[in-house]
Image 1: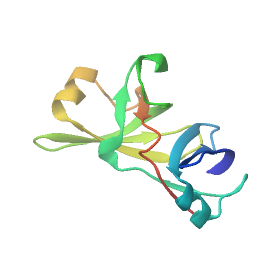
Image 2: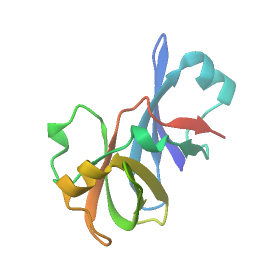
Image 3: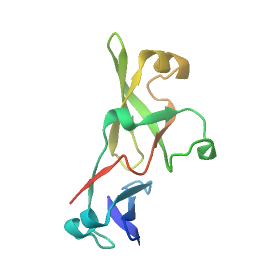
Image 4: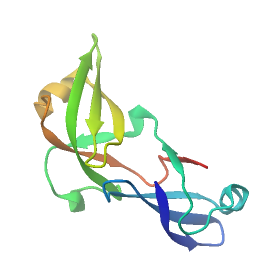
Length: 130
């Protein structure tokens, strides 16, 4: 994605990244990491997320969550084992994300391929790279 906003504090920096499909991800990093990455507006960045940091929601109401990243996407693949389900998600711009949830959560949400869902995660979850 591309950096579209930088809010620099004394200890941390809040960075907003725009994806190809115009989705926006907000992340926070330390000021020292910000300077080490040499980030500026319009910098191209790579976002990494641990699949277990991503929550899924089926309702379009981001105000019900304290997490600031609430992104619409579609389920394109579901892989299950005895305990967990790996859900592959597709954003409108073609980027993909994988979320790992319990099989019980998969059943509770009633997830199916093609279903619209929301990937939810806190600003400290993404790892930035350049």
